[in-house]
Length: 323
Image (cartoon, rainbow, N blue to C red; front, top):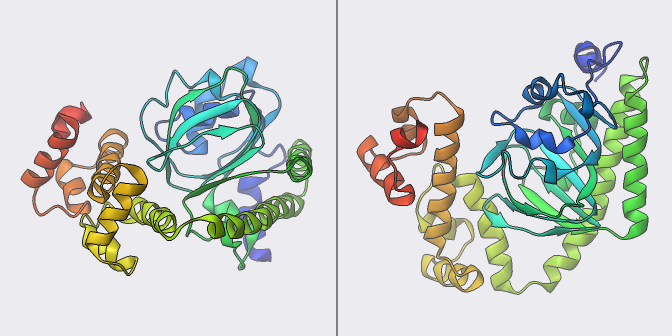
């Protein structure tokens, strides 16, 4: 670990930490390319943003999240978020779509979005406010080391939980300590990593209790639906059939179709197709991959079949959508 700390110390925590303070953490969502380096480039020169928050290409610590400032500007369509995000709503509400699922977040909610999650904002109250944290996979590995908290081990693409006031206050204090430390020109990178680790492990501690209670209250059908959606989010680009997901859940395709339809009002195939077309849209809009390459990566038998599927789902050919 000492080698890794030395290797990345100059990158992450130089004399002035290569930092940029920003007034709007929510501008992070303004990105189409969506990494923190691009965020920094977007907000440079905006003097009104230079307060309360901190950003480098590996870390963003936001003391003032104001989603309403960007909700009408950029997140009107699904957007891929490369870094993991943690948000605590301290006032107001928001209604995004996260990994294909419509959500509602209210005051006191903690929201986690794993790396490479898909986010789309639909609406938010004018008074929404909170604190946020965004961490690159590289920095996460440095902070956590070899033992990864269960909440962040990759089996969950996202989650939310309501915090009791004492727990919310404790996380806010950890978050503020991290922010204060980052403002010091000679701050220790090891202290930063340990503060990040403390914050993440405390979130994991709270999630473990929430998860046990939530799972106990679910019916078998609800648990199947909760298990089905993450599988679709992860595997839809490669596996397009109900049979694959039924096999992963150890049930029959017919039973899976029935359960998903009853739980959500949409068929299992609709969920799979919507997840697939969302990933195709992201590749078409945010990469320069040839359409034939996208078709191959999404496991279509040929480009003609790929084009027909996309046009059926969107009303446009892939080429029309890209341009």
